[in-house]
Length: 520
Image (tube, rainbow, N blue to C red; front, side, top):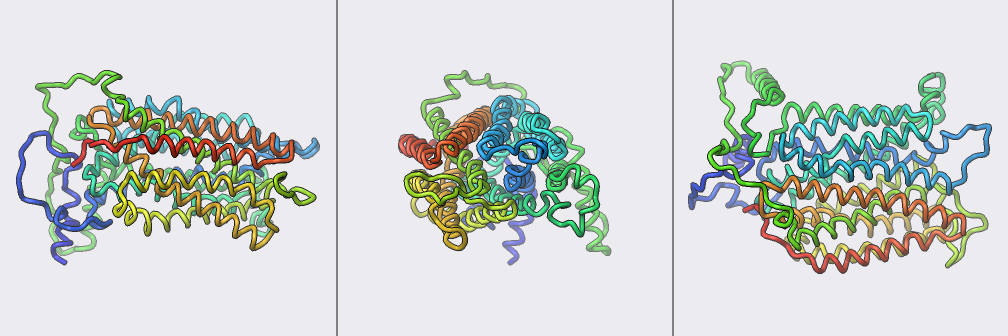
């Protein structure tokens, strides 16, 4: 018990990066002697702060999925002809792609900026920028306004790549990577659980809960503002936690004064002293997390060819293919679930219409996706990855994606009720199983492909830009194809085309090699 307490105490002062001098010792740290588990992860307090900084964003992004179809429908004047499901599908694809497209344009810039000014300032700017864009999106009254705020949100937020870089710099030992790199996807799945449920429950409150909110003017005027206000509160909370407790992991900037952390340390000491009133106040000095960088020799920045080796390029290609079909599936699925059922009922192979679920049931379906994901991540991924290895588990996961996409359009053949929900759960189970193993595996492979710490942020920035480009192209192309499928009377070929793309990813994944990385 005492030994475990020592490990927790040491976690606050353990350096995030190894010292630059080559002083070595044969003595192992207590954590090195313990088997790998969630409790033996290094720098656990920092990982918790990173998780808080990540959690609010997927919650925000997935919250709108449950009501997006109806939000776009509300932009059209009630006196005019109502928009067709195909029109709304196209607009939903544009909304989804606009955010990712703007992230694609700015992702590498945020990565390079984080290599120059530090990781923490970029994270804080991204959170506050997303907060403001979410508020603007919720109060939008036409499609153009909503589109502009989504574009602004993407441009102001490069946090995914920067957070991955911070994770790489915080946990360098390969034996801990299978769990450490699960934290970001786990935050996504927790956001997927809470976000759609909040969005479905809070959307159009005046209509959904007339006894409570029927007379509230602003809720009638802006029926979809409330879920975005709640999302903004989550983002502001994440920003505050990051300001007070997030540590800088870029070695060259880790020793500068951080007023935010100084305030956070003061608050921590204050609350600790209130818990133990008899204890005299301690005068503590802040121990540097990293050794001060030497100014005697400054290494020149590697050339483009030296940075992007053949294996890094191949890994980046795989890093792009998975979000291409994964993001397309996520955004098409909500439209597919919301689109009214065809009449008369479709027959194979003419798979017409959707499943006709209202917004709160769409939110329930997406929350189910999050529950499945978090279960797989906690119970399956670390054990199977440790047993079969990173490459085998990653390659097997990529082969499951096509199965989910082939099965998805067949759901319209099931009658409404228990059979349809069983089918929804089965398709989501396959897709989430594949994603649970493939996404963290992708990040680990890209991290380990980099063997120069000076360019880690740049490579993750490029990866974030390429993934954003895929998330921009995929949903808008898929939405256009889905709309065509609705008009032509067959949506199946859209999903089967995604299965072909996923199969290409299987081939590429078998050619990727695991690099040595910069870790221990």
